[in-house]
Structures are given as structure tokens and as C-alpha cells.
Image (cartoon, rainbow, N blue to C red; front, side, top):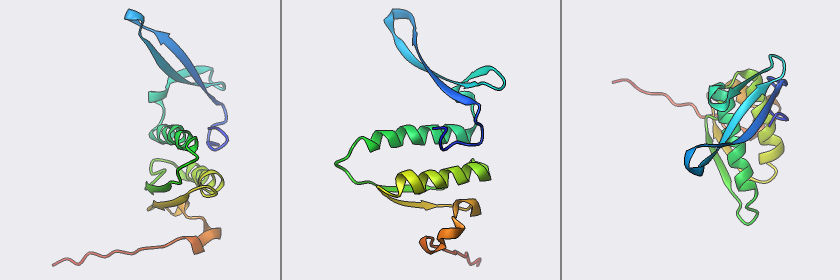
Length: 131
């Protein structure tokens, strides 16, 4: 994950199997910050971090299915990211997704449009006429 999440290089993901009553086990995912030496539950991270983590988990699942070619339709991916994280997402799409899958996404963010690949972008302008 942190190959493509460059906004904080001091993080690591820790997975622990916790045991509860009645022999029930659950997965506890925590994010450790080595700079501040603190660990937090995954749910305490930013919306952007949670989206990116969830997306990578989902993507790793479909990657294992080599018999199906997916078309990835993403509606405003990285909406809760700041500009550098959106750049990380663009790099992930370009390096990991685009070589294997057709990727189509919508965005309002200028940071989600690669200025060196404008020929791959389609801009749609909509206007509403008020009566």
C-alpha cells in the first residue's frame, strides 16, 4: 500500500487476530505511526486513507481472478484526498490498473487529470437552463 500512499512514510499496517468470548475470532487492523510511536484502529484514519485501503483490498481480490477482464468504473475516486494523494492514485491507476484493465472515472478535481495525457481525457460540460 505504501508504495502508492506517499503522504506519510511513517505508517505501517498491523494485523492481529483477536479472541473474544465463545471462541470467536476477529481481525483487528491497526495503523502504526513510527514517528509518533502510536497505533490507531483503522477506522480512526482519514476518509481518504480508508478509501485507498479499501480500494487496494478490493483490487487485490479481483487481481487473483485471471479469467475475467474487468472494466473499472470509478465515480469520483479520491474525492477525499488532497492533491498529492490524488497524484498517488493517478500513478496507481497508470502503473497497476491501466496495463490490465480498462479504467474509466469521473472527477471534478484538476489533480485527477494527468496534464501529460490530455488526449486520454474527455471533458464533458453540462449546463442547466433555468426556467
